[in-house]
Image 1: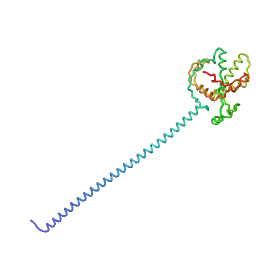
Image 2 (image 1 turned 135 degrees about the vertical axis):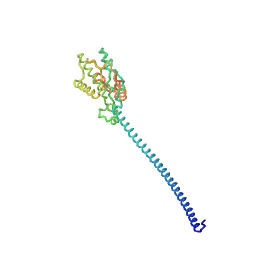
Image 3 (image 1 turned 90 degrees about the horizontal axis):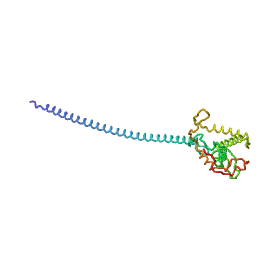
Image 4 (image 1 turned 90 degrees about the vertical axis):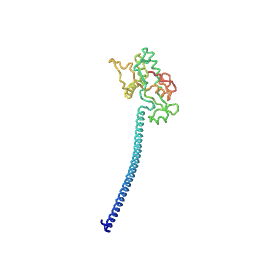
Length: 272
């Protein structure tokens, strides 16, 4: 066996180097673990930061979306309200009454105005007070509705006299019928021919302006719509409005011994 010092020296050296190598390897492994742990922490921090930003962006996006949605709803609601207001305005006259047809009526239903007994029919027509549609309106109402100037009432009330056109159409119909009956009976009448021509044309204009597009059945022999149901405007509502602003006017000529003003009559004598 060889017990030379050189061998031991070399072996010691190799042993020490071997130890140093093991320590270096362990150190390297430790540093790598540390690096992996650090990287893992960095990844976790990055993930948490990403999640935090994503949550923040999602929350902000949700708030922005909600704000936009509420804005759109507000705009649409305003638009709907405005459309409805315009629609309502379109169906409201200066009286504020609705022009929508809500009342059911039977067309050409027999009435006292068509009685075969002329005395009964003429009495029914005479009882119609078209003057019920003559109104007394104050200056503030006239200005609010932007109405054209009209004659002042002679009672020092400061109010002005106006006429509801539907009642004017009733007046013309009533007058023309009266003149027809008088002509049929060979009797004279007080109204002039130009007034009758005015009434004929006033009724033509009234019909063309207030279009009734109800489609009627017909037998083909000048018989149309009898017994058919239709929707009409509410005349009772108009009567009540006229009643509330009546000028206390009676629509007959002074020749008949009754003055126009200060002859109040409740109701207008009109029935369907």
